[in-house]
Length: 512
Image 1 (tube, rainbow, N blue to C red):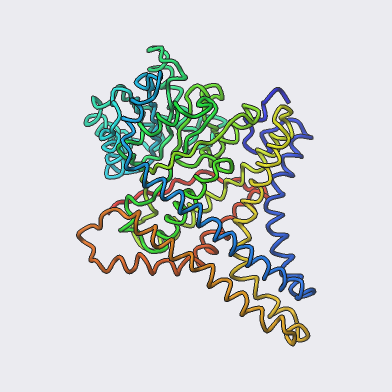
Image 2 (cartoon, rainbow, N blue to C red):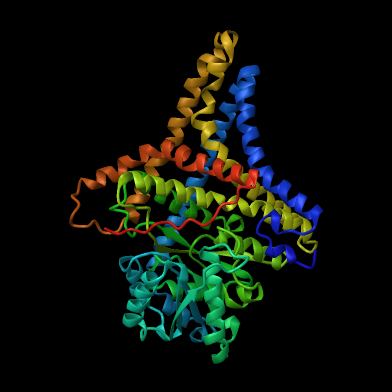
């Protein structure tokens, strides 16, 4: 395989070399096999070795309790820093930088759009227009899809009519349908849009690539006023800006008051997880709306065009491309996005499940990065081991942990037989696990508190008692963790294991 050709791999069928193809295929099988082996082993041993499993479950529950406490401190610290950053005048901080002319920094903002309505797209552009950053430094690209037809063209024309003169440059691109070798999705669209922007704006104006920060935003992403000033500050002050990605905190609160409880819990749970990850940037991969140096993304030929989770794939690609010399920078600054909301309750649940399955399809990056580590001889072994361990462990935990905690922990009582059920351990197992779970669930009080603090102003159509449901919704967490967590993750890993590769599913955006 030619030098770093492995960076272009989507899945095992893309590889021509039979040996490499078999290796990659094995790596696609292993994540699902590991998760299913864990589940089946617990079931089998609950029958054959119930004492072993009972002890394991107690130890695992204690570990999960300690981990919950540990992560809650990260969440608290991240929340505090985010609230502080929202109060800062980042333009003033930019002016205080010594010998760095921040006004030379441009922002290229790529906004891929599918079938979203004007009620979703327009607030995104209004938020950009309200930015406390010189608008003559913003290059905004609305990237529509040819396969949507006249509907997308009509919305694009309406947006251009209203916002064309607001920014330094405004560009509408149309991603052609049925391009050979591409997966129809966000990655291929934003790559097409970025190349057009480079050809028609950046290169003719001779803007230095290192002076451009490119941001890939979902079309429902609404930035806070000082977002680009905050991003510019971190870009100019981080150690290696050309080898860094910059990650805000996604807060799914654009339509949070209208979304049903299940959708709210899933959305806020995702927000809390990314708040925690801000405290652990060494473990974080880019997600959804993120930013990076245009020079870096151009050197790598932009985002992958064969994958569903292009937002995280670009980080793993960068890490391999630069031989491990790449990092994530936490902004501790939010962007607002939409929670799942459809025409009715049941369709919303279906959409939540599909979205979680798509997110968990990020397991496609496990074989990609592992194979890349095998091929890349320049990256330090220590860095490879660190990232590989945490990457594999994250997806194994996603598919198995909530099942072990809430379901499989009771199996020894049902499968262990009469002899086991006469033991003191069998008598105490449910009591011990219940006590540990109650202690762990106390953390939900903190989640409810932070959720209330992150809520936008209550719409007049809702009464004050709506706040009560915003608190009580957290009792749904065990159901959410299993039905909208472990099960979608198992489905994704099983599909990858069987070679049933997933296409891109666009999360439907609705506003009431």
